[in-house]
Image 1: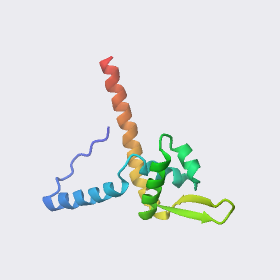
Image 2: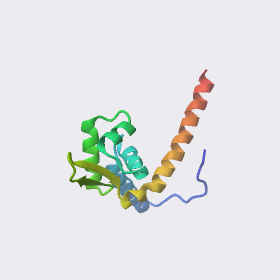
Image 3: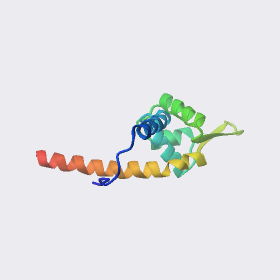
Length: 125
């Protein structure tokens, strides 16, 4: 496990500023599905049913709401094509790519956490 050492403890103003920034980020990215949806669409543009099949467990109603919220926050773009029937394709915007480092860190931490849980389960057996 990585442990950050020898860093000065931030002052109260830095902590308050950092807290505001983290709360803003969590407000926009909060929820079980948002980061998974962004990850799915960064890989490739998809139609609604393709997204729902890839992100298992999400209901149509929740998916529609999350896609709308992600579009409002400029993480994804909804493209409507005048075909019969109408074709709607969702794609990640360049703004969603700004989450690359965040997603990489969450991936690394998630893997580390999973291993920690496995180890503690082995100890209990």
